[in-house]
Amino acid sequence: EDQVTQSPEALRLQEGESSSLNCSYTVSGLRGLFWYRQDPGKGPEFLFTLYSAGEEKEKERLKATLTKKESFLHITAPKPEDSATYLCAVQAPIYEGNFNKFYFGSGTKLNVKP
Amino acid sequence: DTEVTQTPKHLVMGMTNKKSLKCEQHMGHRAMYWYKQKAKKPPELMFVYSYEKLSINESVPSRFSPECPNSSLLNLHLHALQPEDSALYLCASSQVKSGGQASLNYGYTFGSGTRLTVV
Image (cartoon, rainbow over all chains, first blue to last red; front, side, top):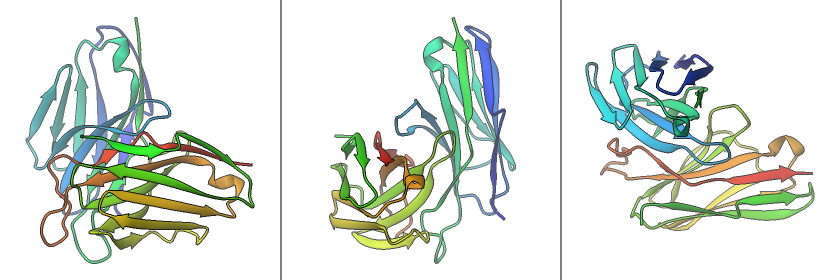
C-alpha cells in the first residue's frame, strides 16, 4: 500500500540550531514530492516540488532534497518564525480512479525557541 | 490574484442544520478540491473537480454534497452532520494539463480553511 511517513513527529530547536526533517515514501511511480508549511488553523502553504532523485531546491533557510525513497527538508539557522508544521505529500501516477491524488504525511511540528 | 478564498472562516452548526462552505479562486485553475483535516492529522481528500466535473469522490458520506457552479467556485453543502464531522475543511486548486493530469509545477494552492464545529 502506498504510504508517506514523516519523522520526527515533533522537533524543538534553539534559534540558529540547524536540523533536518525526513519524509520517506513507498508510493510507486512517484510523479512529484511536495513540501508544505502549515500554521495552526491555516491551510498548507506550498514550499517546494521535487520530481526526481538528486534534485534539490532552496528557499531562504530551507533546502529540500530527494532520493529514490525519501526527501529531507534541511533548515539552516532557523528562526522562531519558522515554527510551524511541515507536511510532505507525494503525487501518485495518474491512472483511472487516482486522478490528482496526493498522499500526505502526518507532518513534523517544528518549534524554534529564541 | 494568487489566492484561494474560503468563507466562512468559522462555522458552528447544529446536527439538524443545513449550511454551505464556499471556495473561490481566480487563478484560472481548472481542478478544485475539498479536503478535511482533523487536529494533528494530515489533510484527507474528499472530492476532486476537474473542469467543473466531479472526478473523485472518496467515499464521503452523503451528508456532504459538493457543487462546482463554474470554474472559479466550489461549494460544499452540509446537512445533518455529526459531531465527529467537526474539522478544518480546506479547499485547494491546481492547474490541469491537457488530458486531465494535474500540473506538477506548483502543487496545490490551499485556502485558509473553514473551522467547522458541529454541536
